[in-house]
Image (cartoon, rainbow, N blue to C red; front, side):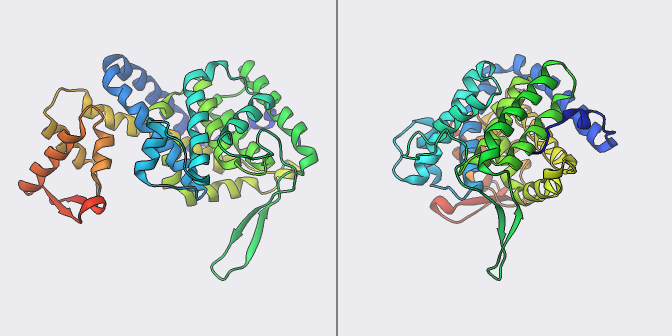
Length: 348
């Protein structure tokens, strides 16, 4: 069975791109800490937006969807789910909430990962919720001509519990002994977790929840304010390509996790930079019109009212709507569509 040997990773020589990503993330994390001290109340409003986006995006990657209205009702109001997709969405909401509130008291062990998986399926009758897989699973792709190809075969069910234990133990050792940079250890853990593919269902969503948990435990809190899952969903093809490139040779210990590490670090850095853009909209007291105007200047192409609301968490819905109407009337924006399909774009 494959060994999870972080010492091999530790001794690798990293290229300038990898080192640059790590340095940039630490710089942005330091700025975020400063920003949070300056405008904590306004930025706290980003938390609920991020929870909604994270829950929506991580499930959508797996084809689990509902309407924008229902997503908000499920996450913000904790309304009762109406169907299977909404049951899965509600489970993700619950796990994400636990991670947000109690990350520092959730050890990285198989037992806790199984408990989180059980909560993920707590709104539905899933007999294997909270248990490692009972049948062999495969990573496969279906092509336009209809044929399916197996891209990667994860560990067999009988190998999985021991592998998950060893993965957690090795991660805890290198983090506890300060043997490896956390921003390298975290993507490697997630990569190996996805190669083990420990569950019959929910592996992708669990990997994204664990990414947030591991980052929080290493004092990288960007996922609280900006959805990492939404960042991944926007680059889903790159995510799968990086994972596939990193899995080759994994069973023999000959894999190269660098493509996946770089993808995840780029995602984290992108989230920090989105946070900085949003801070710029609240750092100075401006009128609602000026705040919305600045937000629209960050958008290229068509955008919806909701996109501007997310950039302006300190403004009410009516303030955003009023500012958009004024910008349209003044000719700074063009409006298209009606009702839910309404969108805007800049004219200059």
